Structure formats: structure tokens, C-alpha cells
Image 1 (tube, rainbow, N blue to C red):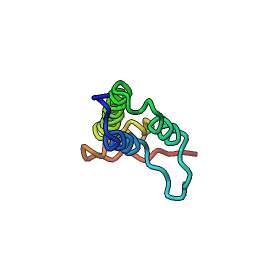
Image 2: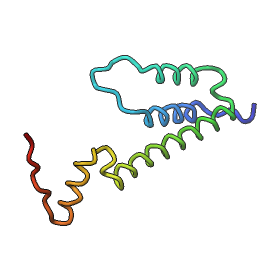
Image 3: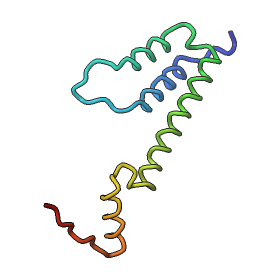
Length: 105
């Protein structure tokens, strides 16, 4: 085959996929199920097929885009995870006001 990719290309794609996965705790010594599955797929004979490599590149691009999207959401919508009262309080503080302390029995 003239289009056989070298092992370094396959290894590079495999490592790129692993880098895009969420970080594992330092105490977790075992591989996650997705890491096991990726290793099986990349060590199979089909791993060197050009179509499989193109799919891996597309998946890496998708994972990077998702990570960027999540970072942008967190950056530009900081109040998404807050309840309504906390959001109102922080909005008032932003313009220099403090909300009155509510009387509770």
C-alpha cells in the first residue's frame, strides 16, 4: 500500500485524543473505559486505514471545539450556575448597590 500511514502519525492522533479527554485524578491508576477502548481501536489493524484516521482527526477537532465552547460559556455567562437570588445580589453589587437584609422569623 502506498498510502500506509507511519506509526508516528497514528500515535500522534492517539495522544491528541487522550489530551482532549477530561483529566483523571492522580490516585486513579487504572485507565478509564474510554481510554481502554481508544487503545484497542488504535492497536487494531483498522487503525491505519485512511478513513479511520480522518474520522479520528474530525473527532479531535470536535472535542477541541466543545472544550473551547464550554470555556467561552463559563467566561461570558458567569452567572449560569447561580440561583436567582445570588445573581440579583451580584448584579446589584456590580453597579455599586447592596441589597437590603431581609427580616426572617
